[in-house]
Image: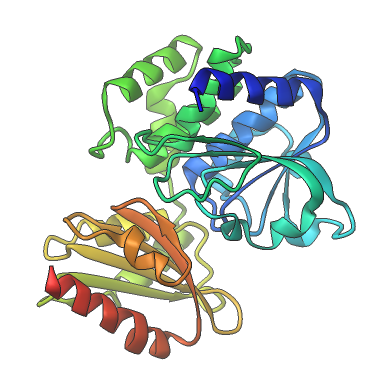
Length: 324
């Protein structure tokens, strides 16, 4: 479908409706939250009612984007399961299963807007705006607002910038192209402070959180022959707030072509983030367990213990990486 038609359909949808559910994949990251919060703030400015809901908690360091976090954001466990939403906006989520339990809040007659930058997106929405060439979902949200001539406040601009910076590694990843730089320039003109926001999301971590990250980093296992590094954390024993610092440490390991960060959530359910700095497509690999994402960044879940995970998933990964 022509993108101009999609822009108009999304614009008409948010203009003509009210009471929106905004959500994205569990284990929210900066792009996930940036895109969700930008939509929440825009709808608020339009006089619309909405709420951001995620299966997991919002990361504290992003609190500066919201004046009233308790009103804007709810963890699924805080929601009344009997309340259903007819108007739903899902961002940065390739497969609707990745919003987890939040799907229980979507009514059977709901209109779902699906905005994503993953090539593997399943086009599960009534309206789908998918651009796998985009560096972030927040970048797509910016385009929707601009194409519909919606007024972007500095607060909305800040949320979009957080999303773009998060998914480009502070404009250091290879997905940082001319369009990304142009949008960042526009956001700065709208009042966003690039240096301040970069420091907030990349250079700030409490001593307590630093110690948690150090514990995980000290136990990283490197399979040197295959070039795979694996980190593990039991979230009950060592409740880490954010995954990104560990992922950055993993990605800095010179010998590692592929990395995995495995978190034990509850019971024996594991959440897994995969990264690749080589030819290896971690999205295809994660897809074998119902996950997905990008060639160089993906996620998945696994039902079982970490020992079972190593025998099953890690051994298969070692074989596939070795085959080239």
